[in-house]
Length: 283
Image: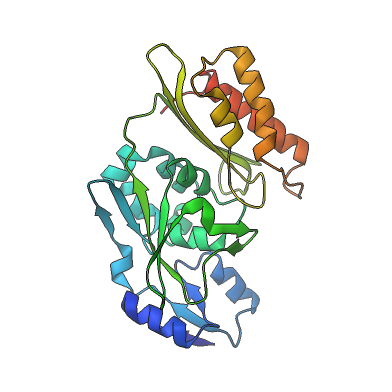
């Protein structure tokens, strides 16, 4: 095995350009599994762990920039992220055990592009932006547009994630939700995961709804049809019932060894229904 060890972001880009076959290594929680299986023998690894500039959190007037190499355990401790983006903190807190959280990174989670990524629904409802660097210059990509399929991304050759931007919400939501449904309470791959933000007008009508589901399709899905339908309406049982039907337009549940299509669809509708009717305990 050949291991390349850049110490700066620019050095990482230069080495990746010269070694396009290299496999980027961030926290390594997925890559080490492949290493133990022997599938990385004779491969070239681009070890990014020494690029300290990508381990920081930066606050701006409009949001927070999370360095691509920041461990999930450090993300949870940041007071601004804890206050302003609690759904992401909740998701990070259930990614494996604390040993995994001490190594795993948000950018690694995104680049791995698993359909069951726990952080993806919160990132989507927060409308996060992924900032990348490459020999062709920087690029900013809405997080949903990074995912192209199971374990596939739209990142180009030689392109590395430098940071993830979380824009501050203009107004605190009236309701917010993160929920992961799995075979057990901890250290499990989700059958479905949901994140939601809801803003209401003074008269109780919906000002804005953002709702996203993970583990329901090859990529994380935002419920655009349901969001558009409920906007401006009061959440009566009849309106909520119609929104549950519209959920089917935006998801294509997968059928695998963890769960069935029918179960995933029913649970996701139950989560959306409870959230819209205000039956989910709020943090």
